Amino acid sequence: MSMNTPMPDIRIVKVDRESLKDRVTVFSYDSDGHYRVDISEHEDGWTINLAKEKFHERYHKRDERDKTVQPYKGDSEIYLAYVGDEEAGQLQIEFQEFNKSVRVWDIDVWPKFKRYKIGTALINLCKDRAKELGARRIVLETQSSNLAAIEFYKSMGFKLIGLDASHYHNDDVERCEVRLEMAYHF
Image: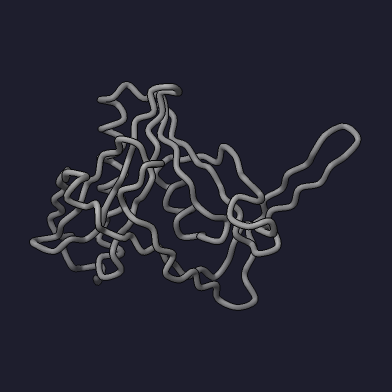
């Protein structure tokens, strides 16, 4: 999409979870850099440092597959974004009463629709829905190797709130793929 092309009309529709019970979400991305995570222990505590750096070679995360509707995602709400009659992305969120948080389980924009502001529309819908539900924050997970996602979330007002240095594998730090938790607070 060029700079002079008008933005398309985006329509977002809440869908019945049961209608998507057989859907598989495919998660992939490319990245030129990452946040290097250094954790060191000292006599008086720990030091955690995240520093942005370039990869020696472009990083390719390919085809992680997961069923969209999963028991661990609770009674989540699923929204599909459309541009015209074409599906352009999805958002899956769950209100977690115990901590008054909306958890973003999935936010995806299909490759053909990158740079159409689909992600922005989905996050804005999430913010509106979280307010309706009385949430105090929105939380989501991303990876230290997914710079585009991190920068997008930051641009939408999300802040880093934590990390898990061995969530995916025991060597996540060495693999440059550390789970980052980010939140938007109301």
